[in-house]
Amino acid sequence: MRLPTSPTLITSPQRARRVVIVSNRVTRPGCTAHAGGLTVAIGDSLTAEPTTWFGWSGRISRSAAEREPECEVCDQLQILTTDLTAHEHAGFYAGFSNQCLWPLLHHRPDLMQCDNEAFATYVRVNQRYASTLMARLHPDDLLWVHDYHLMPLARALRAAGACQRLGFFLHVPFPPSEVIARLPWHRQLFSALLEYDAVAFQTSSDTDNFRHYAQAVLGAQLVDGCDLQCAQRLVRCRTLPAGIDVDDLARLARAADTNGDTAGLREFFGRDPLIAGIDRLDYSKGLLERFRAFEHFLANRQAREHRAVYVQVAAPSREPQAHYANLRLGLEHAEEAITRRFAEADWVPLHCIKGVLSRGTLAALYRVARVGFVTPMRDGMNLVAKEYIAAQDPDDPGVLILSEFAGAAETLREAIIVNPLDVEVTANAIQQALLMPLAERQRRHAALCRRIRGQDAHRWRRDFLALLRNQPAAHVPGDGHRILRQPMASRVRKRQRAGGELT
Image (tube, rainbow, N blue to C red):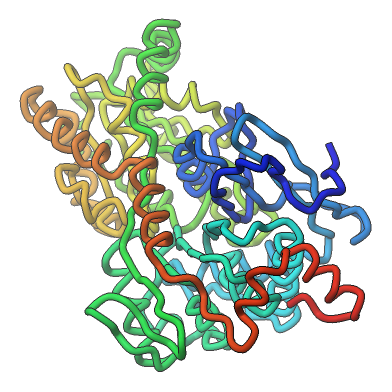
């Protein structure tokens, strides 16, 4: 359905204050495919509060003329999407976002591919998104912008005259200043975060890294030990870890028991205890290191006497890029070697599923797994760890093995915490988890449940929006009061008639 000609999306005279979420990708209501952590967190946090969610449709249009935004309405939620052209996709998404920013922010600057044209396209797409939004915003909207694809969006909106409160959440890590400095455009890019009224991060170390960078490199001043003052803007800076809808995941897991999905998985994989890993196919997830640890575990004589089956779901991710193609090939070779070395007539120890499973199937897999294997080399949070905990049967729960480099490890201390580079320690953790007595499993699980409930997706949304609402409105030099009274759409049309840039 094409957007109506009216520039506003909610026209009721009694319209409640609206939250406008902006992210690279949007998940439509009812979508059951396993999504990344960002869309899971946002989707789980949605409430009855009037919300518009804007982002890329996932489609590639043939020309700029075909990028007209589309709108879908589901109760109080409005989904607003726009296409990318092939050039925009190559520069903004595949190029700068994923070949440059992704490795940088995951502490792998050695894998960065820096390209001036890709960076310019990244900035232009953010400017176009700002133009699309400006024509549709209300003066009292709260904008909640998500992740590294959209860091310059606030600067583009401010340049176009936006006075709304703007907040930004980074789902991935924010590394130390010496890593950030490897990016040629780091000052130009990361100074744009200081155009937001509030910025928040997954862990305290990420928050500290940003504060240190903003002071040491961008000249910001620390206020009250946590916020940042830059020019005439006070930027609230906080740690607000993302969560999941715990009750919804637990309901799906219980339903899997009722409808026979868990019984079907046990029948398919055999009665040996299951170890489950669920990840995107990405070098940051530590999959090859995980396979090596499992092989080391199998080589132990005691482990052979207590057979287990490891099921790894590896959803496809950016496979045209060489790093991902090489990773897929490496996993196939490792799976083949482990199978050839250890498999028996009635036992195949490793199954690697390179595909996307529905949320219900994942809940069933979590439910039957005696061990949740979550060992990334670096992760902003890793919501799989929280989903695994939520899906467990509290009377007979499994055990979470968690990398110390996942953001979740900052709070989920009752998991077995490992360094994924230490193959022997990780292999021993598998043994410990499989042999752990019921009473200890129950104690650890109860504590972990309390933690994920205390930081669930709804709490995450409430805390971030409260931080944003309590921030004073943006300072606009000169005629700021006139801008606030002038409707957004008329200002955009006036600029367009004058041929002005909407950056």
